[in-house]
Amino acid sequence: MALHDRLEQVYANVVDRNPGETEFHQAVREVLESIGPAIDENPDYANQKIIERICEPERQVIFRVPWEDDNGEVQINRGFRVEFNSALGPYKGGLRFHPSVYQGTVKFLGFEQIFKNALTGLPIGGGKGGADFDPKGRSDSEVMRFCQSFMTELHRHIGEYVDVPAGDIGVGSREIGYLFGQYKRITNRYESGVLTGKHLSFGGARVRTEATGYGCVFFVQEMLTAKGRSFDGTQVVVSGSGNVAIYAMEKVHQLGGTVVACSDSSGYVYDEQGIDVQLVKQLKEVERTRISDYVETRPSAKFVPQRSVWEVPCHVALPSATQNELTSVDAANLIANGCIAVGEGANMPTTPDAVRMFHEAGVAFGPGKAANAAGVATSALEMQQNASRDSWSFDFTERRLQEIMKDIHARCHATAEQYGMPGNYVAGANISGFTNVADAMLRLGLI
Ligand SMILES: NC(=O)C1=CN([C@@H]2O[C@H](COP(=O)(O)OP(=O)(O)OC[C@H]3O[C@@H](n4cnc5c(N)ncnc54)[C@H](O)[C@@H]3O)[C@@H](O)[C@H]2O)C=CC1
Ligand SMILES: O=C(O)CCC(=O)C(=O)O
Image 1 (tube, rainbow, N blue to C red):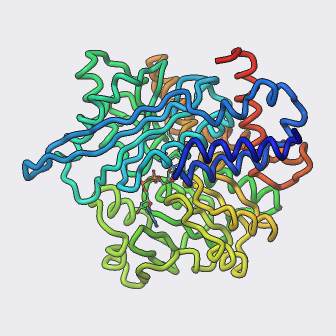
Image 2 (tube, helix red, strand yellow):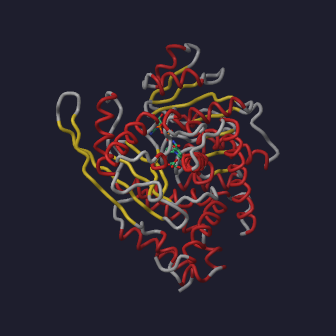
């Protein structure tokens, strides 16, 4: 069968076997559309059905999470962990707590994670998990009881050499603390390397909090350098105002750019003088409030409810909130407004149509599995520190992170060129990540 037909058949099977999981289908299609030239080059990938095997998770768990709210009422949520691929190392990937989470969410995120983790060059496999729990408006005690119940089941499936979860949307340092506390209590083991994103006081790594946002900006800096440009004097727009968005904004300002807008699910703030990142940290990390409150402290800024932040003109766009948040309409706006580079801080925030438009318009486009890989890479550095009972300085860790991001950029860039698609970081990232995992799978035999 011709290669194109075979890949179409693989995709049709994935859709058939995973009905309704549209984000997972989208993530698979994007990878299948890129890897043809690599499969052409190595017939063993097809003969050994590596592609079919990569699309099927090694293991998936779905579980009940019962907990009691502050009114004494019993609440029931659904928990998930998908252990997608362990060819390169223990499953590694975050946990998302958001009401929209279902099997298709964790499957798409886990699938992306396989290739992202491979791109880091570090020994980590791919996995992801979460729950349809909404932490918004919940007290600390409720979040703690939820995390304890979630871990009461999850602990059976994870371990330093098995599966190492971390944070994602709705899961930050507070949640990781409660999860680690319950793991330690149930297992009676101080197994630091079982979770990453821990607070510094109990085995966390410096720079993990900042890593994803900083790393995304380092990746875009490399793309700009390749175009003979820099962040100096650029106007930047960031979506979201959570962990990734906050530290992306901080690094842009350190590199001489100005972030003029950021958002949350209620709308966006525009601040001509540059977003006050300390204020966003206070609102989002401490007070856990809405971004609209920003204008109470900065009356010169403007809050625009329920509109897309991508209507704000910028040179660089950093989508850092959630999947499929940047559509073809947004891409048309950004291109018309002179955007030259897009770096995905979030996972799959750009729709396939929008990605195509950026490519056609010559906008440098850094896909999430490359541009936001610094989070998981720094998690792997946290695992290294835990294993050797060590603790590195901020500067040393940030330097390592920057080297990793430069290396990922160089590999994506070179791979795209090698396969005749210069400047196409999507193809570069997919081919490079895929071949790393596929080569390991071939050597491991039929497992
Ligand atoms: N935290 C990490 O280390 C990593 C996170 N990511 C990805 O980055 C993205 C953001 O994650 P975090 O910052 O960790 O989560 P977070 O929970 O700290 O922040 C999420 C932010 O996105 C906003 N948001 C959610 N839906 C939105 C919508 N429809 N429109 C506008 N804003 C919306 C929320 O209001 C919040 O400000 C996700 O796609 C996640 O998978 C990727 C790699 C690592
Ligand atoms: O640090 C980690 O293990 C998780 C990071 C993550 O979930 C991601 O890269 O999307």
